[in-house]
Length: 200
Image (cartoon, rainbow, N blue to C red):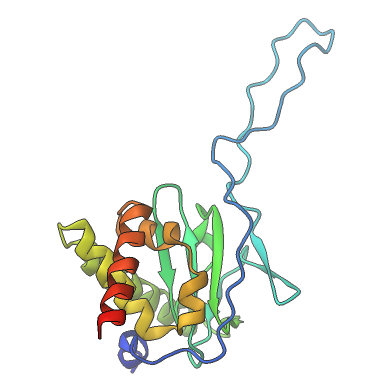
């Protein structure tokens, strides 16, 4: 039932809006401990801060990801979730936030974003399954051993799903982290596509 939604990359998102999230916070950020308190005891070791504040601004609204949310399945929208060494795309119907994305370091909303709250345990389970399928779709591209081909494939998928305005604002770094290539490789792939369009 949900497979059609997951594989419908070719449908172009309408009226997309791209909002850049704040820069990802490093996992190595720590609270500065007190040094001398007169007790003669050594200071406590620094405690790790949460890698992500759990929320982001979108259309003048603060959206929290501390609790589980679901990317609306009727809109051409999604989230790129920055992790420590990679990024994941959560498309329509996918679960985001909560324990699923405890290691999230930043968020990039794409399209006409709308996040829903799950109404039942069945909805949560279905959203988890859809999120895994989105991850598998990206992994199929990542399995390609040639970096330039990976870059071209992820560009093709996003260009079929989002319009040119959204793609122009989508950072090369975000796409690079999705498929494990350098940002320069995405830039080169974009240039190749633009050059071919000019020739045609």
